[in-house]
Image 1 (cartoon, one colour):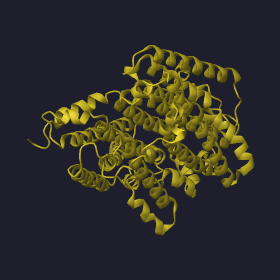
Image 2: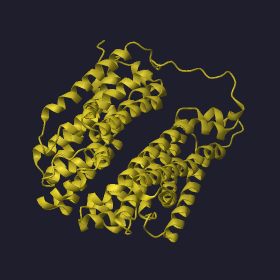
Image 3: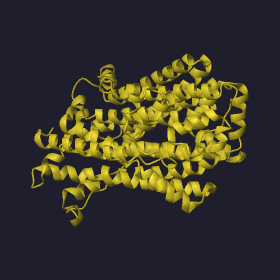
Length: 532
């Protein structure tokens, strides 16, 4: 039998299974890029305003490390590339990584790939189908970004170059994920390895962009740096699309080679055997939940702390971003408060941390569904462990883990702000409570995901949709000037905009009460329904 037999069928299956998640990824990325272009066109409608903006940010190395260099300040498209290029490429890489691991290592871990392989399916078909699904998603992303920017009045050639550069970075990490899925024995470890490589790529690019001349070569070693070097709207260097394509091809060949040398369900990295008897600390359902949840919490918290240091350090150059433009100041005020431009920027940053904490909290809630569908919850609940006690052990992490994540982010942002000249002690005292003020909105989002899991378990994946909708309305809504009723859908619209803004007591209490009601509804549904 042909080793690739069944690939078209598996490709259609993968796209069908992701028929909700993929449009959400693609829609958010496209909308974010298009809204940025429209904002720049409104804020910097003349060449003189764009040149003044470029002069203000050109000498700030912290902004170059965060966003990359500005290659073209004469067009709105060039400013859009500077503002969104790196982060769009990072999100595309995350999308591709999660997609490939979901349809390869996760399928093996759950035992479904063994059942599929028992049919008329070649050994290489599942991996090939996953890579083709990721390539399809990245190509669609490239075309959607190009179409959106062209519709916004930008050059078609530059728009296509930006779309292909973004999709090319996603393609590279689709190949990387295919390799890590062969190396690691679990989907979580495969995603973690690919995520670590993405973080290393970001650091290399930042060092190359912000460092002196001899360090510039570091950016050429990063797939994110390759995306920058396409230079859409400035030079449209089409030949820089060849390195991502070559890297994807090499990674795909390597992944297939590794897949042929291992057993189904096993990884190339040896798994460490556990002790014969459990430690005393693992003799309760809550302790087991802590063991399962501690690694993701540590990863999210470390990432939030690093991001806080970066955003806090960049805050010293926020005045240069405005360049005296009153419209920019008004935009940042609408996003994050009205007490000074720096406070508006920092309030926007704490709002982003709130959305990130909501992402972690939703992931922690949905771990309950993973334990249920994998069959690990059933033997545990067959003992003298009630369902609600089992669920409570996991729910401590969305409740308290999200608080720890926000505290780390607020503390790190304060330290970064202090290093940028804002006074460390005062900055920490202001920014730590500002970050923690996002907790009610985070809890409300996580509670909505729990309600879906408890009442409608087959629609648990919609819990991520709850997060996506809240983030889209809270982040893109003010930029796009959406109607107020659309903004009010997001819990983050009602969260305090600190530092610099008032603390609305009534909305905060209502968010907390809504979180309690949704949590009670989710737990009641879990208590009454059948598992599985």
